[in-house]
Image (tube, rainbow, N blue to C red; front, side, top):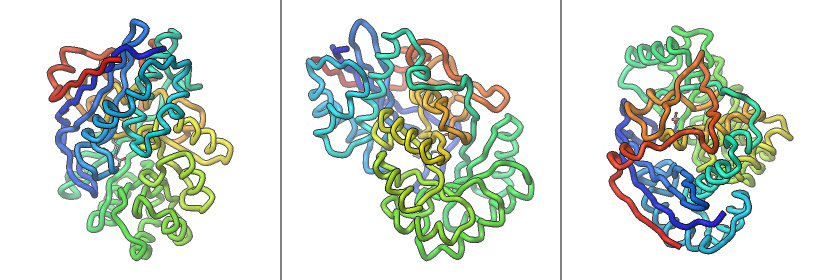
Length: 368
Ligand code: NPG
């Protein structure tokens, strides 16, 4: 494969409902899409950086800058045999994992289309559907939370993850547990607590949670290792796992027992595959996280989640949980609590160019 042209689209996609976490509220998801043209085909990748540097240091603007001014020029005129060459080719760029991952994703799509195979099968996927979880943002009050979760449970979601922060933790979890005694339930703090909160967090242990996700700061592996000794609930790390090496360090330190794998956060699909291998060798459960992606990013997550080491329900929900109208077709639908893995070549979804242009608030073209 050689890249002839790249087009970057910045989309502003209104969410069906505001999504509130401990680091802020989103009503419109900004997504940077990368379309790579080469060998007469177009491959698509979605950059998961947000509009501000809250979840990670990257933003859609830093990603655009790095892609156009540094990453794409590094690939100029290069014959790329396989997308797994991308991390090596982009290695001169320090950091910026989400920007790099978007480029690698588009190349995987191009490569899989060229082979005429679904991305899932090229990655080594073994499932034809993946268990769907749903992530529930911080709600204004407990009755609203119970009603919202009741609807998701009725739709068939297999696991509910509740966003927590100081002031919104033990009480909503207790209310959910009381109403749904057998529901697989987890909580996600997005780094909202400090090591001094260990005693308070122990209060979660009586609710039989699957895990508590990222309680402490993103750069505090040691703090998580110490906290793990005080909690019965398994710790899962998200923000802290920025690379396969960090995953290895976290496991060596005992900082987590479960890993949330997001290909964007770890620098691309090749890195995600390495973490999958590591987790399988060590018998560590992993699952695929989500970043409110459009259908382009979701198709890639579903393909990744179809690998055998991904053993827990994912933050992969149906399209209608995020958007009234998605730029990719067909929408992802829940079937008996699972999301089917697309079977078409590449990502297995079609980008609706009319919708793409309707939601685009910026567009940049790059030529070799
Ligand atoms: O289903 O895509 C989804 C959302 C899952 O909660 C979710 N994502 O902290 O993991 C997270 C959170 C997130 C969303 C983080 C958007 C950053 C941006």
